[in-house]
Length: 303
View (cartoon, rainbow, N blue to C red):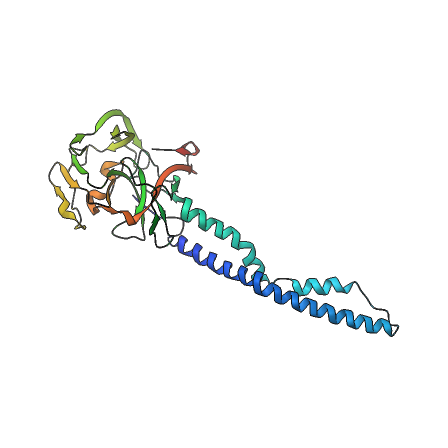
């Protein structure tokens, strides 16, 4: 399932806004404000000298104008005032979104029954390492994706698009998908039948199973009408690591890459079709639904 953040270039937009408002704030604090203060002091000195001269000549003067003159000269231009007000807010949002948590919206059903269309989720940005914003380059090692994690990443065929899937294979794993059942490194994954799942979007029932993915239990869906084999896999990098047949496929996950699958197994465009996800494409670990406007009961953590 593909999905994008509220704005496709939001990270870049935030960076430019943070940089622009920050430069203006810096100039105001260390340059412009001092110039305004110097101009105000000069104007007040001239005002005081004029009043002293008039008073010596016996002319009555209005002394209450002094504060008004000072306030008028020290007042920030609107563009400086707004930039200074927005800078800390924009900078905080940029920091939180770049290094801590980023929101996304789920637009399709490829992760059913774990994630529904319309779910607004949070993604932990530091679980898999601290990365530079915009460049997405890892600078501090923290941890690595584990089997069963729900992960957001840059779609290998178009890095401008964010995808979300479940980690099925980590580097070095042999992932076999045979008759719609996973076998990891020769170990058959266990499944338990659950009540059929109604997909409200398509008004269709699907077979539902509890899948124990090497210790991580979650639900998956199967469509009895869909075949086990993979239709028209792409010519992706390191495709020689995979073999396809009428029952499914077998892939050995390369070093530094991951094999991803959607929980809605027969309705997900994933690593079976377009290949492995390199570490540099990782965005973060999805862990919490913070809102679904169509169903408030969806709010909460998930596996």
